[in-house]
Image 1 (cartoon, rainbow, N blue to C red):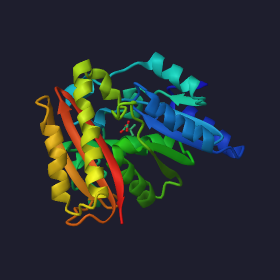
Image 2 (cartoon, helix red, strand yellow):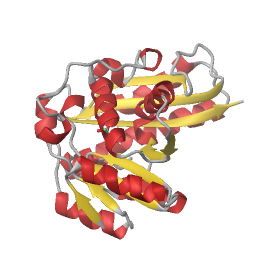
Image 3 (spheres, protein in one colour):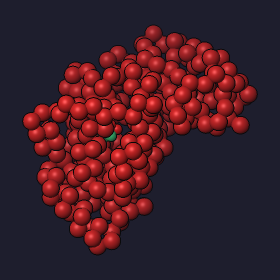
Image 4 (cartoon, protein in one colour):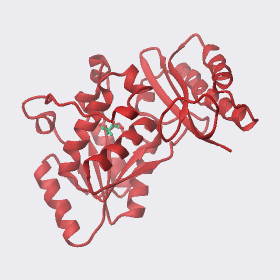
Length: 283
Ligand code: PAF
């Protein structure tokens, strides 16, 4: 496995693979890798000749400096997981290489997908994600890039962004990996105490209950939201950031549940902010 901090070296390597007609899959990450990430890498390996992973905690996408400062780091453990998942190249850039001269003043937006959810509660977050991805995609001109659907809004925005800017790259969304109890795997889970982890299960429980209401024939999003809200409110440790039901393709609000529907939640457990979602097809 090649490990490099140098964007030019990484680009040269990828271009050399592509000149040999080898396909390249890419999974951008912020490290502190877990099974959810490994799942992206394995998927990429099964669909491409070479798999590239980047590990970079991107300061431009944190609207809360404390959240950035506390983001967990474990480079040695990450490299082990990459090796086990048969990753071919790990790009480990420094902050100064990614942003020489500091974070540039440029604002990248996909306005129609940035009207709700994390775009509102984390102002500047997606602009920072699109900025780092633009830089990463220059160094890593992959054929396919893999994104976890736990960050569902990010996945939709990136898909649209790549299409709008004409990056010759396919964006592939990969299903969320959960603990056996249902907790969506996230690097942030490492910051939860055991009792907070227990309470965090209420997020996926609320989503599942919402899903069963919908499958039972409920067509009014407000009714479903009320049931889900009761689940979250049953814990005094949970502060809900948002709880929404939207069209899963456009992120538009719905008055009647129809088509592919997204149930999305963000909540704080103490200082830790967690997100989760599911999609349900309504006939
Ligand atoms: O999903 C993430 O981990 C990050 O937002 C990403 C895509 C690696 C950009 O920093």
